[in-house]
Structures are given as C-alpha cells and as structure tokens.
Amino acid sequence: MIKAPIALFVYNRPLHTQRTIEALQKNEFASESDLFVFSDGPKNGAASDKVMEVRKYLGGITGFKNVTIYERNENFGLARSIISGVTEIINKSGRVIVMEDDLITSPYFLRFMNEGLEFYENEDKVISVHGYIYPVASPLPETFFLKGADCWGWATWKRGWNLFEADGAKLLYELISKKLTLEFDVNGSYAYTQMLEHQIAGKNNSWAIRWHASAFLKKKLTLYPGKSLVQNIGLDESGTHSGTSNNYDVELSKNPVKILKIELAQNDNALREIEKYWRSCRVSHPTLFRRALSIIKKIFAIFSNG
Image (cartoon, rainbow, N blue to C red; front, side, top):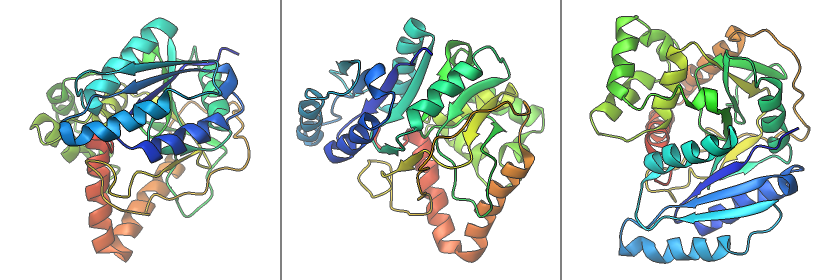
C-alpha cells in the first residue's frame, strides 16, 4: 500500500500543535509516512513570538519517514495556505492526507485514511475520505457515504482536488438555479448556504465551504467512519476565529475501522441522524445551539487558526 503524504497546517498555537503531532506519532503508519508541515507567517508583531515557538518545536519532530517544513515569510491565512499547500503536495504525489494543528487523532486514523485512499482510488464517485463524525445518538455503520466533502482530518486524490471550485459565486448560482439549497443545508438544519453567501460577500474566506459545495454539486461522495477517528481540540478560544464549545466532543475509536465494500450511495439513514443531532441541539439547548452554529460557521470560515 502506498502511504499518502501528510500535509499539516500550523500557525501560532504551540501546545495544540504539539498535541496534534504527538497523536500522529502514535499512529501505526506514522513511520512510513512523509510529513509536510506548512507554517504560516505571522499576521503582525504580536503573533511573531508564538509562530517562532511553533517553528522551534517543529524543528525537533521525529517519528515519520521524512519531515519537510515550509516556513511562510508572509501570512497567507488558512484558506490560501491550505489551497496552495494541498495543490502543491497533491500535484507531486497524486494523493494527500490533510491535517490542522488542533486535531487529535486515533492511532488508527492514518490506517483508515490510507486504506480508504487505496480502496476507492479508481472509484470516480468517491471524492474524499474523512476522519471525524458528529456525536449522533444512534449507532452508525462501520463506514458510510455522505454527499459532499468535509474538513476535520481528510484525504483525497488529485482527481478529487481537481474538482475544487474557488469561485463561490459560481457555486451559489448553481445551487440556487438547480434548487438544491434546502438539500445542501441538510433540510434546513445547517446553514451551509449562508456560509457560502458570507464567503462571497467577504465576511469569511472559507476554503472548506467551497470544497464541500464543489463536491456536493458534482454529486461526489465522502467516506466516513461510524466511530470518530478525530477529535477537535481547537474550540477553546485559542484560535483567531473560534469560540468555546463541547458540542463536537467525541470518543475516539479504540479499534481500527474496517473498510469493506458498501453501496456507492449516500447513506440517508446516517444523514438523518446528523440532521436529528442538529435539530436536537436547537430544541433542547437553543442558546447553546446558536453559539455552536456561530462557532461552526467560523470554523468553516477559516477553520480555527487562519
């Protein structure tokens, strides 16, 4: 099996970066994987010390096949950094696993990413593999597909990333003209369309909402695990664009997630569970739901540290 390179995007959170790296080092495929770290430049003088602290830590990373560090001289912001970094690595390697500096992974995350990339490499309907799944109430299948793409620990191939459309206005026009906004918003339970509108208006610079919309409009599928292999630790007000929330806390899978042949179609039952999760947040805890929705918009805007 070809081990996909890992692209890790970091900025000015040394403790989060360290926890992310340490979790990746515990993955069984880590020593066989090339790690490429993209360290964004500081936005201003106030950010410089933390950026330098992160870079000092990065210089001592071990446990991977090779480690390459890109130190940006200027501040790209996360959207530009991810788009350019993913494009660079995928053009060289044909596939990539994408991480950010606030994601803790199960020891079986890299196995799932690599096995998913291998299993579905020649399946045009599948655009990506994703490691996180919401803490829904009911058990989910071992693996399943949802339409679109996602951004908390993911992997794709060049053929998938080639479908990324950077022009949000084009994406919104197609969603509206094809009357797909209700479906795109998971039956009105999640404000994806509004996030895209805000990106167009310059209220955010989200790469993630454009990646999701690009995949959704092409009717492409993303493979998910039934038990999460990723935990986000960035919802602690440490990121420039994040607040606090434990709504997305999950228990990481203690076992490998098996990739078996399943129907190449969206799992509507799984999607309904996610919809119910969002609606239950809204009904049971309206204030928390509004806060959570605000946070997730910010996450999609520039994830959590751009």
